[in-house]
Image (cartoon, rainbow, N blue to C red; front, side, top):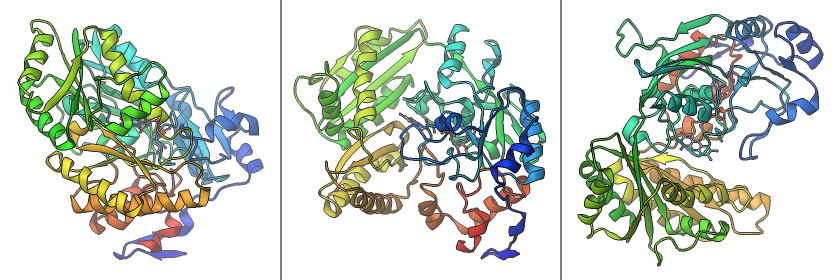
Length: 494
Ligand SMILES: Cc1cc2nc3c(=O)[nH]c(=O)nc-3n(C[C@H](O)[C@H](O)[C@H](O)COP(=O)(O)OP(=O)(O)OC[C@H]3O[C@@H](n4cnc5c(N)ncnc54)[C@H](O)[C@@H]3O)c2cc1C
């Protein structure tokens, strides 16, 4: 059967992967992996079936856990030959339903047994890490070599390097060090047909032909399985200073940001906005967390600066803050590292507790930094107009234009009504994002959850190019079918 896309490109649908029944699947995959590499018992599959939030669930046909790139290659060769659909899985913190299996339809390929640090070179300021390495373990290893791997965010104790690459993860330090894309020097990738692309290198400059690694970064498992990454490191800062300040408005927070970028001598590493509601969540839920600045303010910003020696960093931060008294209503500067970490807990506890243990709508949008304050005002206005019963929780790495405008349903609301609330609230927020020329996904990617919103907005030429890349690299569509792009069987949607 042949399906024609709107642009005239021809897709051959019968080439798609067909989920086998479990007996034939086990027969096909038996013997490909070393001991313990293939899990098929229902109770063994449970922990690979649900993501960090618990909102996304999918029962895999089986879980394959290769322990080397050679095993990964053999596995994919077999899956390609047998047209077995697979989904790569890291730490399950991606939150857009991309890493869990389509229920009863896919084999999860877990990277957890490929977790070695292959090398670290403080002279090259680079490390080579296997994709299943937990981000925090990679960061610790870098620090042991007096370097830092600057990807930093709340899920770092669970997410894995392959997941970070596949989602082009950001985090608190993007404004200084960039996204994961800016930190990848090379990749090793196993393709859908089992071929190994060895693009691992630690060169800073290399202009030989296409930069193929960029195709795989942010591809959410749809183009290949990342098995290792060469990552940039930076000198480990010897000084880190943290402040929490209270402000009258988001507008003042963004004015402060503009001054901080220049006034902190480019040593700014984080600039996190939290609106009052978020601080109240921490105060309510975190037993020992009192009013952080003595009295409430509409907006708060966590500022972090870091540097090596030869600079009096605390003095620099204090001088900067003394010069912005027209914007900052009140603030505290941590006098020790421990105090600084405690200030960060106001943000971390808020993120964990915002849904009061239940479901909430997550958005991770971005707009140009210059428009962020107006965007927040308009989006909260539209949300309040459409759904005054919804509780917005607003925070973000605003130094890179990223804001989470999450929505918590009223207590006791029925499940069906919550679904309706989420749909309405998301549509309102995304409409304002569109007005400001922003992105509906600044961090977590598209996966399955944001697919409809993505396809409704994507440029048709970009979509055609993307579909062409998918067809060229994974012609049988066995890899993460139906994430980002519609599954081939739904191509007529385009
Ligand atoms: C509390 C919390 C805070 C967060 N904060 C941030 C933040 O500040 N910034 C940010 O960007 N994100 C953030 N995230 C999102 C998430 O942590 C990142 O997207 C992370 O990079 C996902 O990594 P993972 O290992 O959990 O991947 P998974 O969730 O397991 O997978 C994510 C996607 O990557 C694919 N994938 C996984 N491994 C591979 C591989 N080896 N090869 C190919 N594809 C693969 C999966 O198929 C899936 O499509 C946060 C999440 C949580 C829960």
